[in-house]
Length: 209
Image (tube, rainbow, N blue to C red; front, side, top):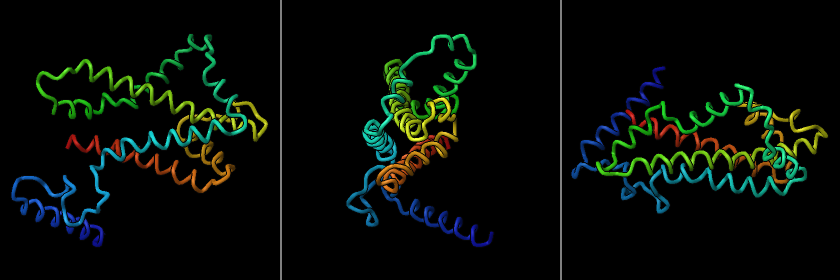
């Protein structure tokens, strides 16, 4: 604990001195013009926000090339109308959308407070909600193409292979990746995507503080 607190205090002192040394009221870690920055430096959020989309597209290209992927995508796109009578389906759908959009966390409200007074908030709300839904829709293709592949490999139905929540991300998908050619590469970019998603969500939440 002593080592831990010494490290935390050391970081705090470093940032305090850097803050006091800021002449033009611009904090040094908010730009890429510092002596410690590399030539590849760019604002963090652009990288963490866009990287998951790049990885999703790469995984989608790989997923649709796997045997059984067509069956998985067909299962994903085939509606089961009778399930609309099940309240759990609506609850799960609402939970997914509201959790991924995060209106209750206050992050969107905090970020929108930096808008100009006459900013078109209705347009921004529609764009943000649409991108959120389309991202979930795209991720569905990535997931179900791999689920179709797993069902093909294990000679099971997709219902038997699929799991919900953390089980899908940390059990089914890693197991599927392990059976692919070049499994180490696919595992690395998949878990890097999860990390960047978490970091990006954290960055947004930290703006509240």
